[in-house]
Length: 244
Image 1: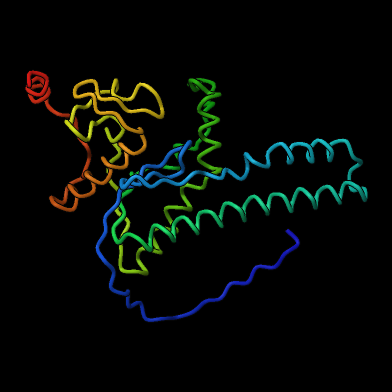
Image 2 (image 1 turned 90 degrees about the vertical axis):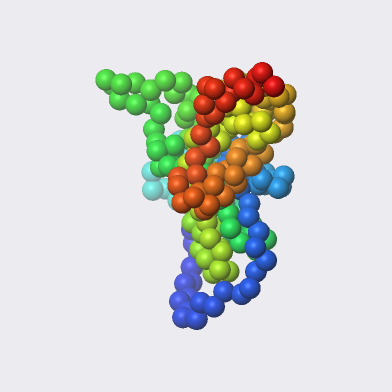
C-alpha cells in the first residue's frame, strides 16, 4: 500500500471505570449493518461494493497492458492503493460503530453467528451442488464486505476494557418470534424487511424484532444459565393464544 504501519504496545492496569448498567440486543443484517433493540440502527458502508466498478476498470486496464511495463506497474500501484482504501474505510467504520455501542452499553447480546460458515462458498461440490448459488454468493460477499467478524472482535475487547461484556445467544427463532404475543411462525416474516405477526397483527421492522428477541434471549440466558434460545411455543400454548 506504499504506507507504513506503526504498532505500539503498552502495559496498563485494567481497572474499568464505573458505568451505568445498560443492556441491548443487536441483530446483524445486510440492508442494515446492525439494528439495536432500542430502535437505533447503523447503515452499512459496504466499501468494496462502492469501489467495485472502479476496481474492475483498473483490473481490465492492467490485463490489456504489457506485463512488467512501466504503465502496468503504475496500474498495479493504483489497484494496491484502492484495496488499501477499501480496507481502511471498513476498519474505520467498524471502530467507530463498535466504540459508540461500547460507550453507551455495558452488556451487549448478539446472535451466535458462525460467520465463516455463512460466508463460505455457495457453489458446493460436484456431488452436492449448492442451491440458489447466485443469491447466496451475493449474501456471502455482503457479509465479508461489511466485516461482521471484525466487528464482533472489536466490540468484545472494547466492552471488556470498560468492564462490560459481549454475550452470544442462540439465534434460533429470533426472526420468527413475535415480541408481543410470542407466536412463532415462518409466516410472520414474509419479506426480508418486514415483520407482521399472523396471530396478533403486531408489525415492525424485521431487524428490530430480531434485536428485541436477541435481548430477551440474552436476559433469559443470564437468568437461568441456559442457552437463551428463543424457542417455539408448544402447540397447546399457541392454541390457547388463538382462542383468546
